[in-house]
Amino acid sequence: MTLQIAIDGPAASGKSTVAKLLAARINGLYVNTGEMYRAVAAAAYKLNIDPEKNPQELVKHLPEWTLEYKLDTEKDCLELYFNGEPVDHAFLRSKEVSDIVSQAAAIPEVRDWMLQKQRDCAKLPIIVMEGRDIQTVVLPNATYKFFITASAEERAKRRLNQGDFKDGTTLAEVAAQIAMRDQIDSTREIAPLKAADDALTIMTDGMTPDEVVDRMIEFMRENPRQ
Ligand code: CDP
Image 1 (tube, rainbow, N blue to C red):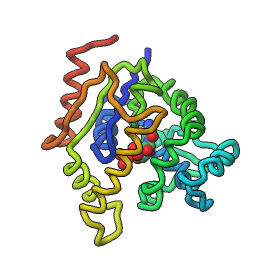
Image 2 (cartoon, rainbow, N blue to C red):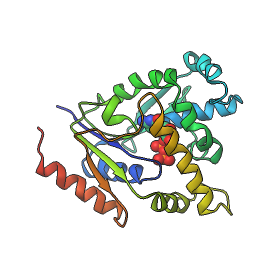
Image 3 (cartoon, helix red, strand yellow):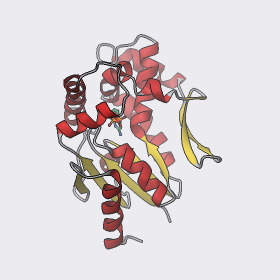
Image 4 (tube, rainbow, N blue to C red):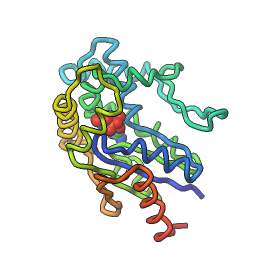
């Protein structure tokens, strides 16, 4: 028996924080599919490929690349490897990568390339997988589906407080970048961001991450599926 928890939501909604906390509370493994798209965008950036202007140039490289999660048995978590090397998490969250990741993720061939890799992770016994299309495309039969959201203002504040930005970055700049990604992610033709009909949506303004996780666990207790 496997337990699959699919969490989706817009940029900086706090999904990663709650997904990690939830995975720890239920002894599951956490998969961040945004990080997988960021790894591809980072590789494109290093090759000077603009995924919006030159999507086919990026697609040409896909067969040469490998991307996989490996279990770190000491830390008991999954670590992402690109072409055999652990990814550089700080670079994946940089402005350079954030500025082009949604354009890379909108390329149909990139999404196809990702799909089986993401489904392979879900073969593990207890998995908490987070992204934009997990409940609708990657794991449509997930045991539980949560859509985690927050107001645009709250999300911009949360992202600025995460400190991934250069000194002097303003709230307005962060809000603009998030709005740009929201627009691309929710209007693209393939696998746009949306909640599944059977998902529980949690509007998290004013809630702490622990309160959000408590609500998710309460929902799972009230709706036993196994
Ligand atoms: O952490 P944040 O909410 O900023 O974004 P992320 O989860 O790191 O995802 C980065 C980008 O990858 C998103 O803006 C989407 O364009 C793309 N993505 C996607 O298309 N599908 C997923 N399942 C996950 C991420």
